[in-house]
Length: 136
Image (cartoon, rainbow, N blue to C red; front, side, top):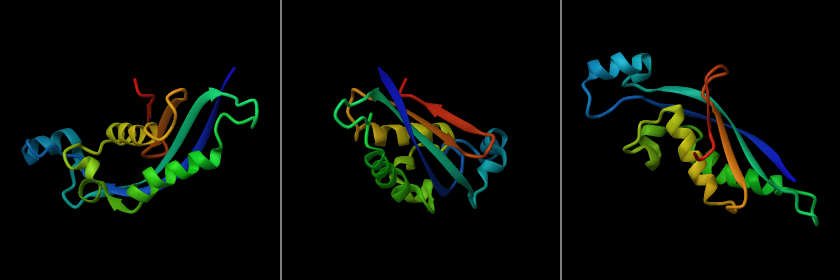
């Protein structure tokens, strides 16, 4: 039997969507107001889900406190109140779209949990816009 546990988290961050190799006009045409050279911010909501077998000794798939600590260390401490383009090395050469942020978060968490667990990250950039990544 496999069961999914989930943990919610939140962080605030600024970013700018643009490509260094494109003109301002092309960036503006593709990314619109998200190409603002002064950046803009979001109140991101994150749900991290881990699926695995229930441990017969503990009754847990995984201790949610362990998952919460990973999310705090790998996401909240590194991204909260940061400018993703400037302050986070993962985005030095990677456009910080919601899609790319979700993949970066997934990779950071994936390296901290056993391979026997499935992992899913859902990142809400706004209440209506969100991305789901499962490592596929």
